[in-house]
Length: 149
Image 1: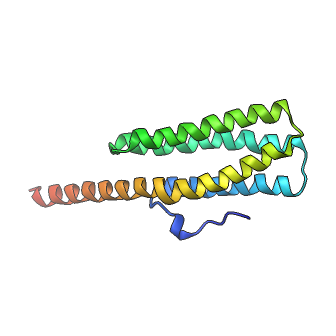
Image 2 (image 1 turned 90 degrees about the vertical axis):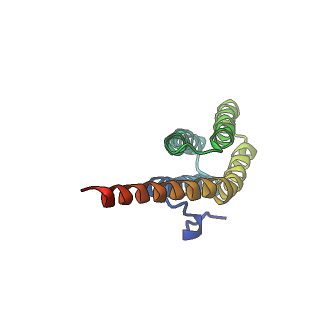
Image 3 (image 1 turned 90 degrees about the horizontal axis):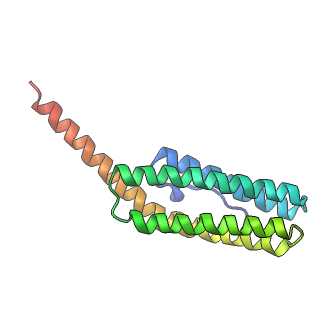
């Protein structure tokens, strides 16, 4: 089943939402490679890109967490770390046994479940927190403008 971006997946920060859209495209590309029977090189290429892009995306989220002092930063980072370790481990297993289609299927299923749960639960909490912090900052700016001579 193909993942489809919808507004209910939005966390409310353009950079994060755009990266989530890209991750959906990568996951769908991986699934397409599996379904169309593309070669091992194609599957490995998508896994490599997914691993790199996931690190970029997590870095972006973690930058916002640090900047706005998100109270659940450690828990959120642990979730990121788990997926990065899983991807690295699976990438190595695929290299060792490139014809094991079950490894690729496992990754496909894990990505779909992780993506839906991570965005709908964990990232949405982060998005709500960041939105609140942004609104607080804007209110302070407005108050300072009003106080200015």
